[in-house]
Image (cartoon, rainbow, N blue to C red):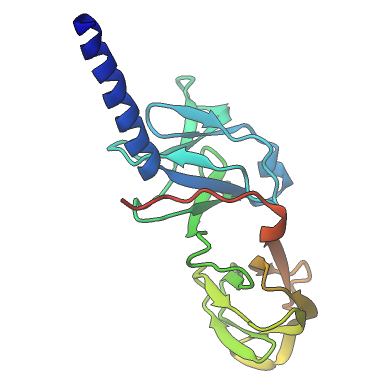
Length: 235
């Protein structure tokens, strides 16, 4: 019996360390920009282990991949491209250990060997609550957005701007205009507001460049139709 104690103690220590690592792990989700990126073979690497990203969809967040911060910076690996010496091409991921639930937008980049670049936003419901509209302006021009009775500026810098109309479920009017020409409406629609649904909205240049209109990529998420999302736990 005495000879077994060290082994049993080692198992307890191992389980305890595994629990600590799990508590400090950060769940990361991925969102490809379009169908062409979603169809590519991409993996996430933390420097020691790699996980292939499967079932990517441009209008739906991926399943979470856990990341525990180490000295090795995390990267995305383009498994369908290689360097001159035959190694897969990687693209850096700027993740912060303080983030609770990062969402990685995987964007096209023709100038990078991988053909990709990444933009990371905090996606925790603590900061991006249910019922909220989160706007990201990818047009490069400063815009104004009006949602119901709330008006806010959308800087042309990809900074996330949140609007929470609040109140009961109802239809709300949405309008966007250039800050330097508020009379020309670039987008107008009526959306349904629901306190159970949050919307990530990426504003992109419209296909008709002469009109100056904009298009919107809208990624909704309904808490009534999804399992509980893991978040990093503080200790």
